[in-house]
Amino acid sequence: MRGKSVNLYFMDGDSTGRIKCTVPNWTGTTYRIPRTELEKCRGRDDLMQSGVYFLFGATEDTGDLLVYIG
Image (cartoon, rainbow, N blue to C red; front, side, top):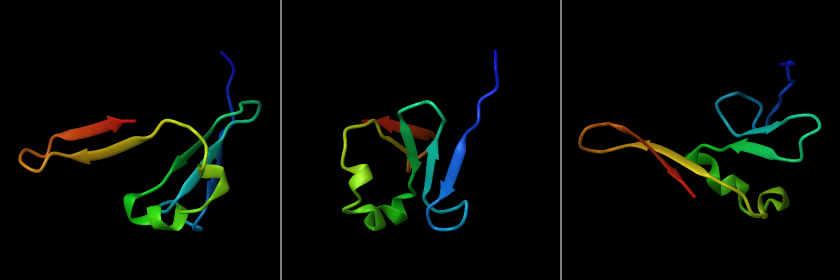
């Protein structure tokens, strides 16, 4: 198996904010967007297409980790 390069673009200038991730020679793009930063993404053309999203969180009563895939 060969190695791959991953390009990370820190949209807000740091690793704790929004991140755009691309892989050379692959047409997909992934984003990491904290819930507190969603409003900054409203109206972005690159986010106005179909895709898959993951919402990560924890239950209120036990703290068990959850993921919702939509």
